[in-house]
Image (tube, rainbow, N blue to C red; front, side, top):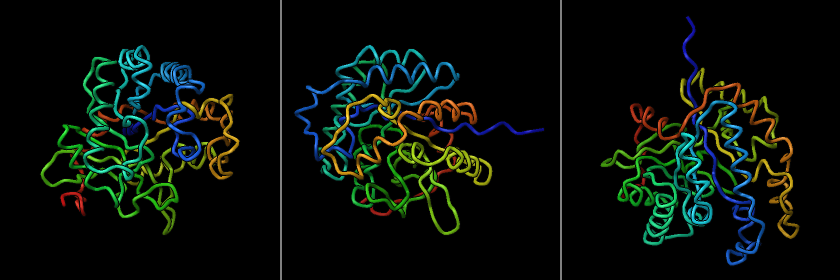
Length: 294
């Protein structure tokens, strides 16, 4: 008798095309209000895609977006998905100190909860920016009552990453039940590869992601964590021509193929909300407290 497939964690980082880390040095925050707001239509398309596939997910949403799109927040919740925090305006954690991070969390959470009428207990740092520089962030999250974070990419990368962190769920604080659920990586020989979505999913062949998720499920017997952004299904978004070439290549490659690849992925694996995955994984967390309790 075949065992039931593992339910993997499906997540959407809800931010608009002009709010991404790749463009933070070329698009000023005070210009955001004047730019083409496309996040609502793109997120609505994703909700339709999820409904057709019969899957539920977690929407890690910027407070800035929630403040402007209350009906969208309520639709996310009404359709059975989890609403979670992505911070206020995509400031990476290592650009903040503990006090300003706490303020950012409170502002975003209050806006999300007011918009949707539900409690917010999950968090994802912009650009996976909890790393070896910012373990103090876990104390702030625990103090504010968050039950889980999905803010670590346990790889070495020029844009983000905490290579020393565990690949799977861990407790960063010895005195707290807070759980960290890292984004999925795959091991190939002595190399650790990013395999949890985003630009890697768009740029690389579909079979790589399918192989990586299948390997994590079958060999490690652990759920995968996959993420993407609403702007990644939007081939018609404005082009930021003055951004660095590397940033433009990462941001715009294969946008036109993303929706079809997502549809295939949703059908090939079992998917669910991050809060439910965090609850299941909390039963077999390892401890990883280096620097976090200092």
